[in-house]
Image 1 (cartoon, rainbow, N blue to C red):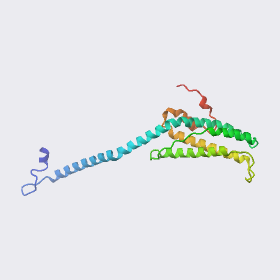
Image 2 (image 1 turned 60 degrees about the horizontal axis):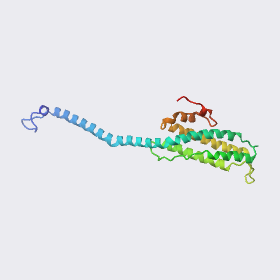
Image 3 (image 1 turned 60 degrees about the vertical axis):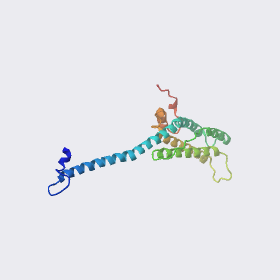
Image 4 (image 1 turned 180 degrees about the horizontal axis):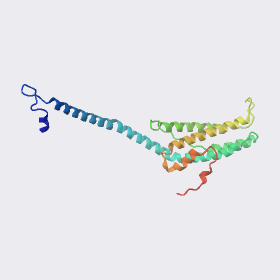
Length: 215
């Protein structure tokens, strides 16, 4: 009651009653402030909280998908790193049949790249996986079509061009692998060391995979 009395001695303006308008102004400001805070709180729980929850769900889905793929990606990098030794050993003077047999052995080095639903949270990773899928497809095509025999239907055919195409598609695949490895490193910390090795390695054979580490 003391609070109400402070607002004025009576409630209805009249001849003998003058409310304390300055007190009412203060009270109105206080209630307006409380209303703003209440509205902000409702907005947070109605809008911000679901967004944060959605981000956590999207990250969890990406983490689960990349947990198994990380192992395959690391193995693929090491396999294609070793394949570089074979690719670099092929020269224009290499017998075509021998060269074809050497290259066809590389067709076993591939993986099935997982497909993630594109969301604001996963879009960079989805794009990176798409580039890897495309690069591996081009590498597979260059392996399947590799042939050093002279093609009479192709003008100015050069064995050097055939070898260069294989080398280029191999290099592009390695670049795409490093890109994906860098993006999933935080999602799968269990394999962070090996993924970091993938990111920092070049396109060729990486002897660091055979270095024993103390666990």
